[in-house]
Image 1: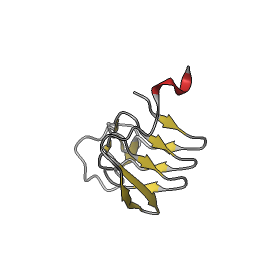
Image 2: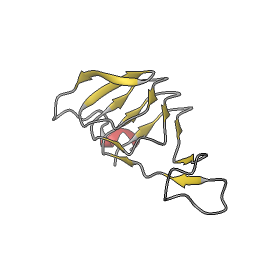
Image 3: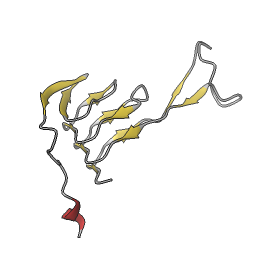
Image 4: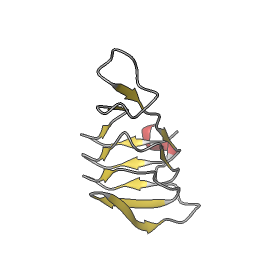
Length: 104
């Protein structure tokens, strides 16, 4: 709910197991394995951010800065940025980074 994904964002939801180390690989599909990503409520993902397949959760009320490369879980109520993305600031718990009436 209330998630904003800016222009040029790439969210990768699969990877390749070239060395045969994973058990959840799809057979006959170029060693492809899917990854699950949960994006919490009120999240903003900035322009040209890259969310890698190793990320399983982006916590609610969080912001990913533009051009960031996210390689691990993003906790709730944080601003992350950089390559690799790191926590830049903790945001107040009651803060809503996106207002639901924005699209009305």
